[in-house]
Length: 226
Image (cartoon, rainbow, N blue to C red):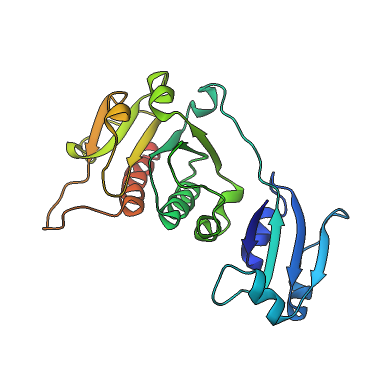
C-alpha cells in the first residue's frame, strides 16, 4: 500500500488504474469527496488522528491508502512514437516526484528508473507528483541492459555533449537523467549514443536534475510540435 494526501491528488486517482482501498477525512471535507465505488472504505476522523497517520507537518485534511501496482515493461514497443524519461540513480524523492510531474506536463507517459533510483511510492515522491503519478507509468529495470536493447534513440544529459539547441531530435526517444551528485554511471553511459548538454552561460557548477529535465523536455516538446 502507499499513502496519498490531499483532496486534489485524490481526485486525480479516482478514475485511474490505481485501486483505492480506504480514505480518511476530516468532517469538513466530506462534501468534497467524489463519488466512489462500494469497495472503498471511508473513515471520518479528527485532527489528532489525522496528525498521527499523516506524513506532513500540515495535513491537508484527506488521506487515502492505495494498492501498489506491479507494472513490468516486457518490451520496448510501448516506447515507440513518443519520448520517455529514464533515471539513473536519482536519490531525492522530491526530484523524482517533480520529474514525474514534468513528464505529465509534456505528455511523456513513461518514466523508466534504474533499480537504485528512489522508491516512487515514497510519500514524499507521491506528494511531489501532485497527482501526475496517476497518469505516468513508472518502471524499475536494469537500466544499462534495458538501454542496450533499445530500438529508439537514447539521449543522455551530461556536462559535456552537444548543445540541446543544436540536436536534431527524432520523433521518438529516451532521455536519460543521472544521479544528483555523480551524473550518469559508466555502465549506463556505455549504452548512450547521444550525449547532450544545456549550454552554461554563468558560473554555476551544475543544475538540479529535475530542473535539467524540465528544460530538456521543453526543448524536445517544442521540436516535436513544430
